[in-house]
Image (tube, helix red, strand yellow):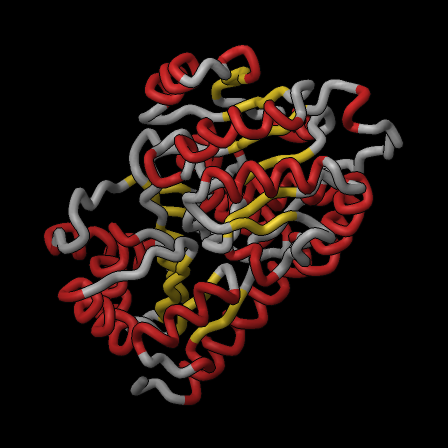
Length: 362
C-alpha cells in the first residue's frame, strides 16, 4: 500500500501512478491511500487500482491510526511505502502495530533543523525498516543529517515511460535565425524559484531577442507571476499555458526547458524533457546535479541567482543544444526507463520481505 498526501498533481504523484501501473502489470497487488479529491485519487481509479481516500489533517493525528490498521488488514498488505510527511507517523505506527514492513520514500530534499530534525531522527531510526531516496543527493543528505547507515537507504530514481516521448529530430538551424522556445513546467508555488526565473527573462532577452518562454502549470502564485511579467515589461515574451496533460506534444515544440527551483528531489518535468531530447537548465539544489554533465548534457547553475540562471539559459541555447538533448535522452534511457527502476523496486521489496521472514522479531 502506497501512501501519498499531495493535494495537487505533482512529480511525486506521477511517480506513484507509473510505479503502480507497472507493478500491477507484473502481477503485484497494489493499493493506494491518498487525499480525497486529489489528482492522484482520480488518476489511480482510472487504472482500476484500488484507492482509499483519507486526510490525516496533521502529521500526528493518532485518531486515524486504527483506520489505517483496518485498511492494512482488510487488504492483506505486506509492505507499506509512505511518500508524504502527513502519513509518515500515522502509517508507520499502524505498520508497526500490524508488524508490516515499512518503507519511507523521500522525494523532496528539504532538510530539517532543531526540534524537527531530532523528531525525524526517531522516525528514521526506529519506525522505518528502509528508506528510498529518489536522488543520490537526498541519500547523501540523509546520511549526513541523521547518521543513518548507507545500507538503510536505497536510491531508486523516478521512472519514465520512454515510449510516450520521442527524440526531437535535429533541425540544424542557428538559434539567432529563428524563434527559440524555452519552457518551465512546474507547479506555480513559492518554493519553485519562479520569481527568480521571471527576473532572468529580462537579461536573457537582451542577448537573445527572438526567444519566447512558456510557463506550463498552475498554482498559488500564478497571478503574482503574471503581474511581475507586466512590471518587468517581459509579458510579451511569456505565455502562461495553465495546467496541461499533453506534455509530450508541448516538449516536441521546445528547444530547452528550465527548472529554476532552488531545491528539487529529481524533477519529473526535467526527466520528461530529457526523454524528449530537450536539454534542461537546473540549479545545484536539484537531484539532477549527479546525472547531468554541465555544459554537455544540460546546464547547471547556482540557485536563487538571476544572473547565473540567465547565463545558463543563454549558454545552453548558444551551444549545440540539439546534441546536448541527444545525450540527455541517452541518460534517461540508461538510468530512468520505467522497467529498470521498477525492477530495482521489486528486488528491494523481495529482499526486505526475506529479511523480515528470517528475523521476525525485527
